[in-house]
Length: 189
View 1 (tube, helix red, strand yellow):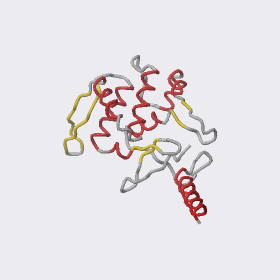
View 2 (tube, one colour):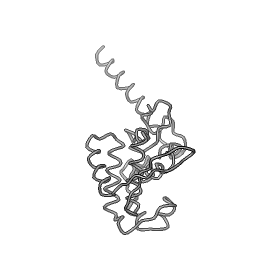
View 3 (cartoon, one colour):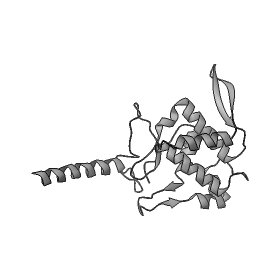
View 4 (cartoon, one colour):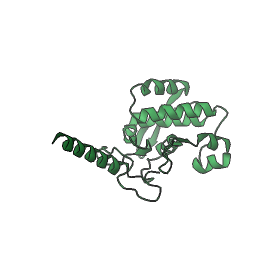
């Protein structure tokens, strides 16, 4: 798996981990969905999401649909705004003003007491604060990561392998592009 040092701040990290319940592992390179197993096994769920529990409103189909819509939004799909707006409406979001660090802060909360409602509110807060733009997916392995770079220009989950399960998607992409350019040069000459 890609570099896990790409954690997001605060509650956005829970949303990032939720998106990554669907992945393309480096060893098999086949799509894997661990959400059904997590939803069936409370001990596994608690290990992955220690401070969140599932409610009756959190059906597997609903969780998978939300994850797919959140992933589409991370990938920059233009139609994802419509899907997210539907989630915002169904979660019945409300605004709360709070004093934080000597200043007033606006927080978005879901009326629905469920994991889905919590995630929808996290997404709304991230969009409102501008943090959402830093939540990205790798174009190669599609792993969701948080871009900590100063200018927000990171494209891949990692440039170096970073461990036995790591993948250097950026380096792989750059080497592939270089080889393709060289092949075109050789074909033209």
